[in-house]
Image (tube, rainbow, N blue to C red; front, side):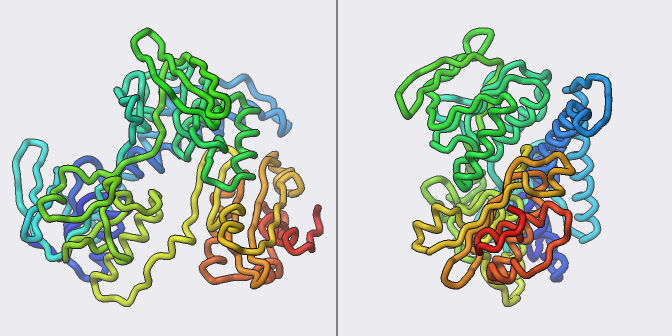
Length: 466
């Protein structure tokens, strides 16, 4: 069978690319070996947020008296939390099935492999093979958990993020290796429902070490307050899984002190690696980087004409919204539209623990290293009327402007619902908005988003409410 476009993988990069191509008049096929929606929808973004919502509701109930409400003591039902999460993911996957039918996209189930002649051979679950061809093929096969060299994932005592969402029972003690978004979100969830959690991070700042230092510092403080043991600037030496429990030996990079942490399960959250093996890249001579990422130009064309790649197989931010944007940009370029390359300097990043974390653009440290003279403003939610009324006074909004031209260089937030607030700053940066323009844009009161205007006022020495 022949198509105008074949998409290999149906994650948040693949399925939007397929839909946009269909909208542009192409005959499209999408190949998926598991469930439509890929890792994000089935095992990542969506089901994890369902778990985090359960943890948030549980915390609300436990603090109901803070809001003048008396309730009986609540207890978590781990099995039902997991079941709800899987149900949300299943429902979303069915939604993608509907979108495929609506847009007349052919869904091919099986494992796809590139072969010469602009063709893909698909092997189904029974081992049968079929060949499909198209002048344009997009690789969108995503990524998987990366294990440390000395700590293999056995999915029993050492697990990745997929297993963390389907454990048969709640562990009493857990060690999370890695304090990026995945590690932090699972640490928050399990700690909230009563698991004793230790987070070990190699980099110095501790939790979310690549965020602005002020944000990392605030999140470390909040997590430690809730009982999470955070070990920043610490290396994992070994993991012993031989006994009934797991023994994790860690070593401080500051003073070389070693300690052994005993737990029931270790979650390896040290990042991801691209799924670029066994899909035929070598057969076609498609170039890869040293970490296995596929090399492409600004419109996602590989070195082989007609073969494209998007999403987590690239050395670009491994975020669902980035993959979606890449897929749509790629398809529009294929169709002959006059499109602009994605500006990777304006990519929002969100972490959905509590308090939430969201950012876009340069950190203060990176802006200084780039040679900018800065105007920096930080407004704490403790001074926000809406935050006080909501019982969510933790955190702040921090904005960074170029002193010379007033250009918004970066925004960094930690607090309730800030993952919804960051979009304002993304649009502002995309439109090259200045600090004075944000300051003179009237924000509604009382809202959490007022903190953006207030932080800008701090930067320009015009703040009213501090």
